[in-house]
Image (cartoon, rainbow, N blue to C red):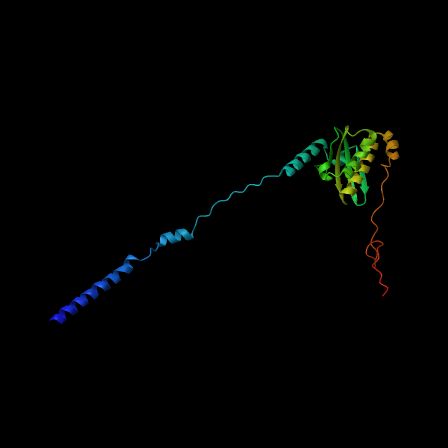
Length: 207
């Protein structure tokens, strides 16, 4: 009888232990989100992004100068009377003179900005007006293309000198004396076959 009681107690203790083990996983189950939450996380509403482009100060200044030039030159460059064309190397410049305060506008930009503040190029542009003492009497409007800035500056100088002849024929003598009415015909000599440049030959090796 004693054996049967001890076996019963051991079986009961084992049953209670197994019941505790079976209860633990139910208490420790991880939380699983419902289908509605997972769908909402996958399909997110797109955000509207509004971007605005702001014009730079240089662009605003260029547009303002364009309006200013068009207001001063009705009908464009070709419709003006005091106009001169200058050429140098591959550069061509059309110049219009109007009575003003000495402004120089090249391709709708200020001359100092367009010529990168180079004092030599700015001097080329001002020499014809300074020679006659008109540096503060006329506004200069220029359309230039081709070549580099150095060639364009010298072409503008010739164009201004030719335009000043249309103001008065008396300007010819002082401008001619300074050599401002002579078209500089020097251009780059073309490259020759077998040479590296116009005259530079490849290095000679005797042995």
